Structures are given as C-alpha cells and as structure tokens.
Image 1 (cartoon, rainbow, N blue to C red):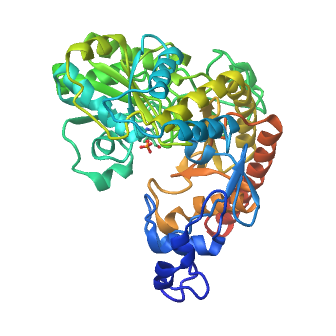
Image 2: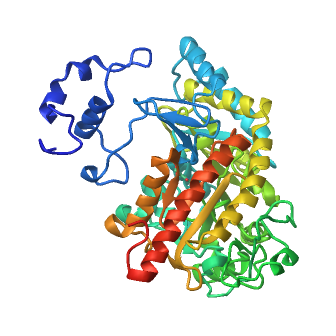
Length: 527
Ligand SMILES: Cc1ncc(COP(=O)(O)O)c(C=O)c1O
C-alpha cells in the first residue's frame, strides 16, 4: 500500500492500521465501531481476497442486510439479485436462522468429530428426508470443495478404481482435488492437481461442442411450457416471431448429438479410458457459474444408464443447484435421477455458516458399515452450523420457499427471454427456477461472446462496467465470463423481481447503446 493509494483511508498508513486502537478493540455486531473507510483500510492491509490480485480490487463494505437487500455503512440499500454467491437462499438475516444460531451458541458450540449431538444427528436425518431416492447418510464438511474431495475419495475406495470423469464447464471447488475435477480456468493455478481426472464435453446447445447447430426457439414476450420442467417455448409461439437472428432460449431436445444427449459421448470416452478404471462421473446437475447449463431432457438419465452399465458411481454436485434453487429441493428431481453420492453446501445454511455434506445412497451407506471412512475434519458437523442447517430447512418448509422459487422462476422464464428479445447484446437467456443466465454477445448472428473466454483486466472491462452500472442503480448481479447470472434469494417477491428486472433492462440498454456505438465507431461496449 502506498500513501497515495486511492483506497487508503485519509491520514492512515498500513503501519497505522497495525497499531490502530480501533483494530485492536475490534468491531462487534452489537457495537460496530469502525467507519467504512477504517474497515476498507484494515482490509486492504491485512485481508487476502479469493481469485484476485489484491491491489486491483476494492471490496464493497457490507454492514447489514434484511430480506433481499443488503447495505453498506452509508445505508444505501442494494437489491441482491445473486444471493451473494448463490448461497444466501433465504435472503439476509432470516430471523429463524439467526435465532437458531444464537440459541445453539448458548447451548453448545463445539463437539469432537467422534462425538455426536442433537443438531448433527437431526440435520443428517432431515437431509435423508428431503433428498430424493435412497440418499440416506451424510458426512458433514466445511463447504462445497471438501464435499467434492470426500465424494471423490469415497468413490475411489468403494469401487477400487481411480479415474474420475468430469466436465470442462464446471466448478467443484478450490482445494486440490476439487480444483482438479473443476473444468473452468480456476483449475489452472492448481495444476498438475490430482491424477486420474478425465474430462468430457458439456451439453451446451448454444455452443454445441460437437459442432451441431441445435435449433433454437423464440420467445415473443412470453413462453409456453411443454414439459413442465424446462424452459421450452412452443414452435407455434416461435413462428409468430420473425427475427431469425434472435436465439433466446435453448432447445431442450438434444436430438442425435452425442454430447448434448450425454450417454453416447460418455460411452465413447469410457471406451478409450477403460470403463473398469473409472470410479465415478461428477457433474453439476445444472451447471452454475460456467453457464447455467440446464441439461436437455434425457441427458441425466442417459448418463445414469451408462454409469450403471459399467459399475461407475454418479456424483451430482448440488452445491449451487440444491436447496430449492431450481424450483425443486434438488435439481435432479426435475429429471427423476438419483445419484449415488450428492454433494451440497451453500444453501444448506443459506450461507449463514460454512457447511457442506456428502450424502450417500443406501448401497454406499451399507458399505460404510464394514469399511473405514478414511477422511476427517476437525469441524465436521459443528453444532452451530448444523443448527443453522436445521433452521434453514424448517424455514424453507414452513414458508414454502421452494414453491416460491418455482413460482418466481416462472416469472423469470417469461421476463428474461422478453428482455433478451429486446436487447441485441443478449444472445441467449437460459435457466431453471431462480437460476438463470443471460449470455452476452457482440453479435447475435456469429454469437461472438461480448468478452473473450476467461477475459481478465481491460479485456473483461465491458462485463465489469455492466456490473458497476447495475450496482450504481442499486442492483447486485453476479457476472462470470460473458454471463450475467440472475439468482436472487428464493424468498424474493414479485415486486422485488420487477424492481430488479427494471434495472437489468436499463443496464442492458446501456449495453445495446454501446454495441451500436461500437458498430459505428469501433468503441468497446460499456466504454
Ligand atoms: C457447483 C459448486 N460446487 C462446489 C463449489 C465449492 O464450494 P465452496 O466454495 O463452499 O468450497 C461451488 C462454489 O461456488 C460450486 O458452485
């Protein structure tokens, strides 16, 4: 940090922050004692933020929240259209969860891994109840990444095989094993990673990895649902719309494409790898940050069938898509596919405390009766985290949060394609429930992404400026690559959705304007 650093609190140096009485006194929830500037200065001097070059970031200071809004020290309310990092599913400061944490804290804060307690046992039983099929026993982790780690290890022990098949457009966490099965570029810094990972392509009809030109359907301001679970617009609605360069919703029929239908592509890879060497296939049920790729109907069943044929376990990562996000408790329920192992985190406590779980089916649970589970964590099943998990599930049940996610998801399924139709900078709108993405392009016909894949620095400027334009208008969005994710808390109301969509509309208009400028004089979008 330098004295003229714009982030520096006026009159404070890094050394000062080290000695700052405010720092040593420390803020408390009941008695906040630092100004926004002081917090920023301490953070800048002492906190390392993830996935960032520290001198290039300026983290927002958050001091409070309620419902679908959060705010900073200056009190300006921001509508959260991303549930922070798609974890605050119940929104901010849900009283049922905050009370459960406080009351558990008064009773019992910590147990040892080899002990048990009411919160851990009850949460495990609740997970068995709300997950589909015969998923029945849970190993609790600190979050999603170590859930991935333990799922992979368990699959290897159980099958006696080494290889794991994973997909390119995926994120499974940042620890060594989880990063190794991750496909997106966040993996690169962790390489060479753990051995034995084999990768397959993704069902991504908009940019089909097998080169197919999948038919797209058009959304003239509304939609008709043909399957009840996917965002399909009927062909008759499509014909009423005559702009043939506008491709707004993905087709849900993978046709004969081996990649988009799943099984044939997996089977080809297994042929080269030797199916007897493969322990598991790991997939995000609905891909999250890597594109909100909703599997075409039949995809998961086809992967399941190939796995079963070769004695390979199916691990579904529901860290982001689980806990109501897609309008069902777990996304795999949309296609009636039950994995052998499910990983969850994020929404399990609505993000209020760090917790994840590896949930296993009966055959693995049976196997664990006479085989060692050779993994461990000091904080496995921490009582505070488990109490938060129980309260989250109870609140979701009592307040019909999953039903609300499904109903509000219908609103997004109508409104986002409408916005996409109106804004030339949007190539496609896709999603399920309250997990949606707008894929931004420079040109709808060529589908050239608005920013290059994995763009950094100025190359990513258009997306950063879009994010900032939304924030300046009071809307918090998540952006990744050339995608705008729309994933508000599952408790959102229709009025709040409309508020966010209105701002999104304005921000996309800025994008269109910039595209038009670019066409006229070569300026970058959002410049
Ligand atoms: C699908 C998915 N899996 C795993 C993870 C890793 O979870 P965590 O950050 O809790 O380690 C994430 C995090 O974003 C995720 O989105």
